[in-house]
Length: 474
Image 1 (cartoon, rainbow, N blue to C red):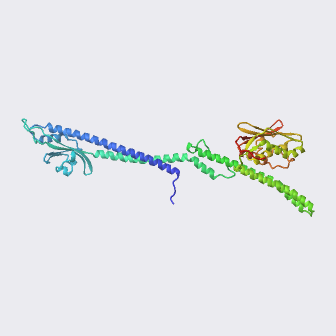
Image 2 (spheres, helix red, strand yellow; image 1 turned 45 degrees about the vertical axis):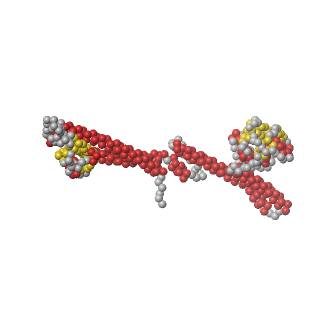
Image 3 (cartoon, rainbow, N blue to C red; image 1 turned 180 degrees about the vertical axis):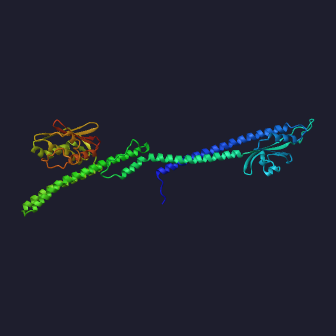
């Protein structure tokens, strides 16, 4: 199986390929422009040599025929070893060749140059040439011109010096392209390696994660913009995991602590019951006491399951109209016997209707009233206030009693948290009532807050005001 390239290697190869491609295109364009430039220079030089030939031929001595202009040409091209001149008459006979090494055997035999212009090679050396027909000067005495048809002149230019220069330029260009591609690959690898460093740190951090090492965070300031969002998301995930693991650890410790008491009671009572023979009535008393502990454990398990559903957003509630005043009155009637036992007055004021699940909202209000009864001194008063405006419905449960310290207010809605060690009234609570109340309120889109000052504690529920289906209950 072929091994996949790393992202760094791919980016480095991409940098090299792009650089090489751009440079190759530039080199090809530059080569074409250089070839065109040298061709223009060659043609310019050839036209100049033809002008020299034309001047020599047309200024020959009258009456001397073609021989005298040719001798003039030979003198004119002394020292111009890279230029050749071939002269033919109109019948194709070669009259004279100057520097014959620049012509092919066919040209030396009289073959004309096609189209009057062309390129050829002699012994591997490239040549370029032009061929024109020139008229000879007139005869002496003003007669008809000598060789009236004139002569054909082929001028050849050796291009070896051009080709050598272009070959060296091309060699240097391709070497530069290769070097530039290599440098681009190295720079691309370095840039990609540095740019992907945050992702490598993410990998290293993820490999070292465990339940005991969730406090690590990645630096966001040195991360490039392209991966900064990933770094922030990874840090956020670590923070959520750390919080969840801490809550799970606390939750597990709290469960173990809370279940230890009833289980210890059951074990103790059972051991005492088995220590000696007892009557049927005594066994019934022990079983009744055990039943209370079992009920306490069952309530605790039920409450924990309820909270688990709340944390997973699985608390479905209906959209029925709930009259908060009627629910409060029903709960006041339920708790009235306990309140009378401690001479506590429960007063309700105001009324409002909200949309939600009636049983869940009744449970939330019941938890608040039960909590207030446990912490209200004998002869005190519990007030329930209900009010509504255009946006929300507010329900307040207020009771007199010892104030709750500010540090306790921040945790009062946590599971298994108790703001007071007193459990001598209305049974022993497991510390889940306020947590359940908050879950119910949030499931209905509301919020709950606690305030304690001046010897009074207030729990205030704020619920959004929504349209609800009519309540047809009697």
